[in-house]
Image 1 (spheres, helix red, strand yellow):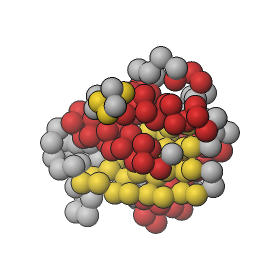
Image 2 (image 1 turned 60 degrees about the vertical axis):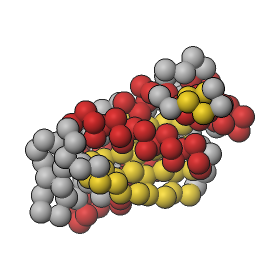
Image 3 (image 1 turned 180 degrees about the vertical axis):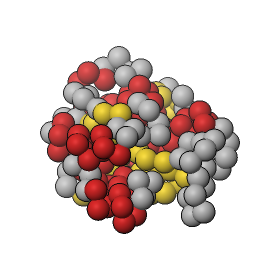
Image 4 (image 1 turned 45 degrees about the vertical axis):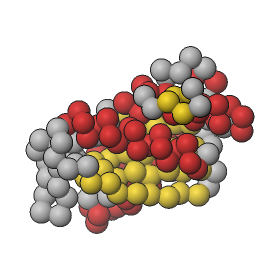
Length: 161
């Protein structure tokens, strides 16, 4: 964990959430709950987290988060469009001010011609506004892609909260 001002980035995010009286929820696919797990490393995480989802299957994204099947068909499950819908859907389901959606290809399989191993899409819902990003971490190994993805989530959260 990165230390800034003697606080990890996760601790900084939790403090910012607490100061604004915000709650956060995660909808994770390729990270498999790692983003949420990093948050609960902070002892006061219960003040800002009520629920999160690991929605690995497309059907789970549709059923639990309200991701539109047409969006998955039109853009693919690994897309900013799906990541945005995941972020929005988890925030609505959890009634949280912040929702994070993560979908990607951790590898070593799953790549397509236009979507290589290491491509991860992120959605961030903050009080009605949704932004998204795509990162290409490369074929650095499944768990390294997951770790780099979670680190990116906290970098963005620390900036936007």
